[in-house]
Length: 123
Image (cartoon, rainbow, N blue to C red; front, side, top):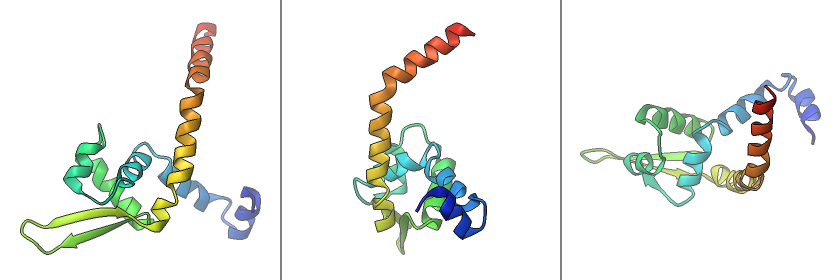
């Protein structure tokens, strides 16, 4: 089913699809998902393994991923409370396309950098 057909069926002009892609393709989501592909992690461990992410942004990203069903959050009734995050089957299904996109980016870095340099020189 193509994009246009999907939008016609949903009747929302593509808003739902754009919202999902906005979430999946944001700066932090793929890094968090790729990190959780290594296995279940606690918040602190996840924070340490995703370079540059603030605690607030990690919290927001995790909430959105949980809301969308890409991760599960397990709270253990301990003192202090222990919270663990893991990918759901839907979250795991994001790994192959994410790796394909990352591979494409790595393969085309020289082309893109050359194009950017040529563009800046023309300006």
